[in-house]
View 1 (cartoon, rainbow, N blue to C red):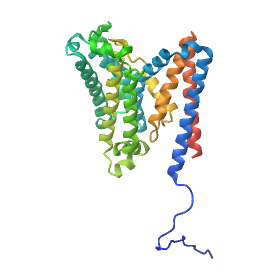
View 2: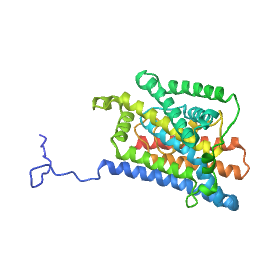
View 3: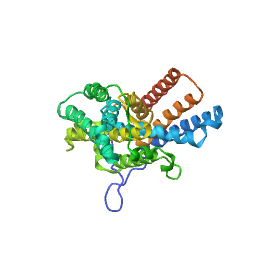
View 4: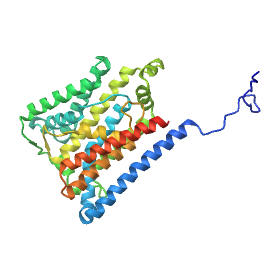
Length: 339
C-alpha cells in the first residue's frame, strides 16, 4: 500500500516552497553564457586584428569606421530580431532600405531639406512594413513568400526611381553629420543613433507587454491567442517595427554615403538574420536577445574589417561567415536538446 505524503506546510497552513532554483534563473544563466561566449569571440577577433595589422586595425579612425558600418545593419538587425522571435522572417529588409534611401534622395525630396529626407525614409520604411504586415497577419500569407515578393517589388521600384543612377545628396545638414566635426566625444552620430535604437529595443523586448506578447506569439501562437493576445495585430505591429528600423537605417546609410542608390542594402537580410542567429535568437521563434544580436553584428563587421585590412578575398570572408552561422545553429540545437 502506497502511503501519500502531503507537502510540508509553513506556519500559515500554506504549502512551503520547494527547495531549488527557480526556472527563470536557468534562463538567465544560459543567456549570460551566450553573451559571454559572444564577447569572447569578439575579443578574439580584436586580438587577431591587433596582431595582424596593429597600426591600422587599432587606429581610432578604423575603430570608428567599424562602429559606423555596424550601425546601419545593426538598426536593421534590431527589427529583424523582433520578427524572428515572433516566429516570422523578413527577407525584404535590404530592398526596403534601398527603396527608402532612393525615395528620400530624389531632387523633389531634397528640396524639403534635412527633415524632408528623414521623414520620407521613415515613411517609406513603415509603409513597406505595413504592406508586409497586412499580407502576413490578415492575408494569411507565409512570411517567406510575402517578404520575398516585397524584396522583388522594392528592388524593382528603387531601380525605376533612380534609372540605375546614383542620387547625390546636396543637403548640407545631411552631409555635415558624416564629418568628424559632428562627432560627440569622438563617437560618430550614427553610432549614437544605433546605441539609442539598441537600448529602446532592449527595453521594449524585456520590460514591456509588447515584448512579452512577441515572445508568447513566437513560442506558441495558438496558446497566445487563447490567452487573449490578438496574434494578427501583434504580427502587424512587428512588421511595422521592422519597416521603421529599415527607414532609420536608410537615413543612416544616406548620411554615411552621401547618396541614394538602388543597390543599397544588398544582402542586408542575410546579414541581419545571421547576426540574430549567432546572437541566440531561435529561427523557430520564442527566444532571442537584443544584446546577442548586436554582438553578432559587431562580430561580422569586425570580420569584414580584418579581411579588408589583410587584403583577403571576399569569397573567403563569405565562407568564414557561413561557417560561423552553421556553428551557431549547431550550438542552438545542442542547447535546445539538453534543456
